[in-house]
Length: 176
Image (cartoon, rainbow, N blue to C red; front, side, top):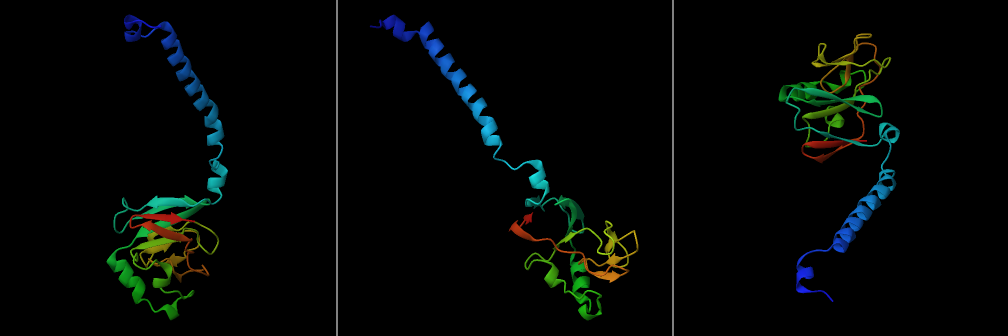
């Protein structure tokens, strides 16, 4: 039976009970952590093609960024109205690899161009906002792409490929 004075003040036994319980909880969490952590994909799996999400909000109009997906450079361009109008004014039949600008961008998000940044000639990395068409210029052999990533001049046989992507929100895309 407890007296009024012992009920008001915790005893040594109460302290040991709480300390043992806390140590058991911390130990249990520490023991479970590796099991939970091993369920996440490792770095090689992520690099091998897991989808990536890219936040578009910091990209200013007229600016490009380069991200990597499956070890390949991906250019994401926030195109200006002028670039979009110029890309749409091109006679598609005159292109070496005919493809309209509308077919290379997502409807409702025409200002965003997403392409794999590997030249279709010999695999060099093109430079953004270079060349005669304000698009991409391959420094290896002089291929020039327009602001829609379509081949306009040079030895490259095809347009810059568009990777599989979707808009998760107005300011975020998922590639892959």
